Image (cartoon, helix red, strand yellow):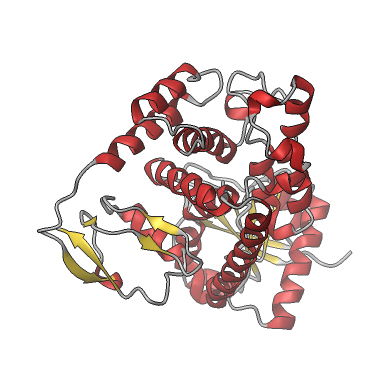
Length: 376
């Protein structure tokens, strides 16, 4: 087995010792407090890799920024976001396996001259390619389901509203938004007779067969590693909050993205019914009837807030043009902001917060948009 590498382990707030698997896997080990830049002795030590234990809720870029000038790869234990990491592993990985990972990461970094500063640029290129792929899949779905894109955009807008008001990390929002655009992709595997029949026209057995479309969609998306997180969200979108759904998952066992799609999808279905679109009060009443049984109670409340916000009349008289680079907290956008793939990122009437401004940085803005109208 190869020698252990020189590890610089970041101690999270309140921690004084590294995990035992890190201690055993490292050839040499130096500890550094969370968020601190490398001091002179640390630089003389010459670390080859950074390790730390964290969660998907933490700002990984912020954690690693003070050490960016070391230009060495980082491995996150318990971290699944890989855009700024050389690798992410399970926090409970065996020491022998972790040693293999660390050696491999260091070897690849030496061979390819790994530069952490390039990771965000690479991640952005991948993100654009994935969005282009999703746009292609949307067009294919529209060939089968003519009103699909319009309906998917409505679900996406409601989902984005919920995500923004839950202050979710930008990467998690991006996955949920992508899942909202592909939530019905499994319907490509449903027969025309079931797909285009109204619910009241299907037997209970036919409805059960129809309700397998999330499973079909997840199976298809899982073939592409870059879409597996989205596949997990899509797969569980028909689970009920009380555990009475297809897989028996309940409450927080159901992925948050799936719970969001459940509520946003129902809201959109009621508002865009081909027979008679439901009035806002009827939508609220329907969601309230399913609060705590079909839907996450918190998300029902946010959907209700979304309905109210959508009916607010914002005066145009005070609107002024502002360049995208000059947007600030507190401004209220007077028009929708769109991505390069035709996805509405920020709905009209949204008050900008620091979190929403970060969200804007995650999506490639449509090239025709240089400035937007805002209210002070």
